[in-house]
Length: 302
Length: 306
Ligand SMILES: Nc1nc2c(ncn2[C@@H]2O[C@H](COP(=O)(O)OP(=O)(O)OP(=O)(O)O)[C@@H](O)[C@H]2O)c(=O)[nH]1
Ligand SMILES: Nc1nc2c(ncn2[C@@H]2O[C@H](COP(=O)(O)OP(=O)(O)OP(=O)(O)O)[C@@H](O)[C@H]2O)c(=O)[nH]1
Ligand SMILES: [Mg+2]
Ligand SMILES: [Mg+2]
Image (cartoon, rainbow over all chains, first blue to last red; front, side, top):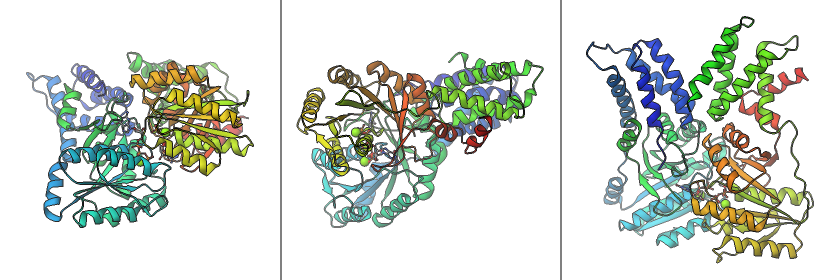
């Protein structure tokens, strides 16, 4: 897990504010320094600025009684701000959603989408493994029919995990692959259908169209954006565009084990107001952890 | 970062204390430049260093007549950034001796395997006989991926999906391709990051045993300034001399990659601008900096200084 020096950032922000008046100007002056500290922790500049603007607004309105502890007020406001943010983003109980969908129509479908190389296929494998362990019949759909070796990669994981595997070969229409896989659910052959798609840059219109088609054809119960925890400011553009053009219900952030400081998590939630469901913490099949906002906030504010 | 706040404030306050300048204007321009760099993912530390140098040069150097303060500042900033990138000239790799061995390293998913295919294609077009070695024995499908790329480019290939030992595989691969007449041998390795100790150990052994003529670090342009820390760690494990920046076709500005370059004194050779085999361009510092600053008109400004 990352070393959360965000914690220290906030701590000293609070320390510093505690010795100033809580008027807007003082707050603003102090926050401008801390915005940059957040940026250093991997939060996008735009997001860091907004967060402190929000905080300043909240604090500035506060009347501080003579006996009240200013430090505590600020800390409480900051905690509340982030709590509001994460609660606005909501929570996805993926296991409950799965059970519910299976009860209703017999199967549960997830489509994974995101930029090139950010960890979709590996994440599909990790989730497939979790589902298998819970006793579900799982299908992995190789709807990345473009990238060299993509099908073999997905196939390797499927056979290792003991998941069913659907492929129509390279250059096939990815939507057709997704459709084939969903049919296995409809026929009662599979309970969980995980659709791996090709990585794509959000700037490529035709690829975003293709992604929409995959979604249209497969009618997934869940769309998950897979992002890379090492991404910096571009997290904003990536999340915004994928969200606006295709839409998704939540995110999984990979490579959390790669000496990042957790900043991208804040950026993505801030931008999309959608929850982070899991984080990837290694290349192995078990290296997936449920993301717990409370735990994350504890880390931030403790 | 203790000096953090000091740094930013110093730039501002020193300029403020100078009587000869319109401090307010200078102030805001420097802030604007800092914001642009930060938004582009340049490491905070580096942003501060650059600001400091710009300020110093701006105050000490004589300004050419007929230019606005803003233009002079931008010109100085441009010079400083290009300096970090190793200068104006586009680097050409000298293929000597033959066979010439290139090893690609980098973080997981950064684009190594794809770049291996692109580089093979690039040198094949220049008339070299090229061979690719699949020395990623770790990631599922890595062998098939490189093999498919080798076939589509039409170059030699060596790999062994059963072999788990990357070092002996790569040695055998080099030997085999050399005998087959390859003039350039490109070795693809597994992705890894600085805290994966056994993988970092493996890449050291690869370097020691294979003795590549050059090592390329492949950096994903979408990644932020955290990449600089990774670049430093790689630098300690394998002294790479060149960087390839992949995924420049997205919206990322590449400041993380710039920070990685600054952290390692390496030179950028190519940028990747797409997923296809032809989507590789020689690196042009001027273009890169213009994009970094979000200033498409940079060229026009610089032209006037020429
Ligand atoms: N360290 C670490 N590596 C990861 C993690 N998740 C994925 N990876 C690695 O990142 C690389 C890319 O992962 P993939 O799953 O192939 O990524 P992808 O998004 O499917 O890539 P494309 O399909 O090419 O767009 C692989 O080497 C994975 O092993 C993680 O949580 N931690
Ligand atoms: N858009 C775009 N995609 C790229 C570029 N270079 C590589 N990619 C994509 O990025 C993803 C990862 O590329 P790989 O070549 O598999 O990366 P890698 O570093 O070999 O990954 P590992 O071996 O898992 O560490 C693939 O989907 C590639 O198609 C580029 O310049 N632009
Ligand atoms: Mg994939
Ligand atoms: Mg690879």
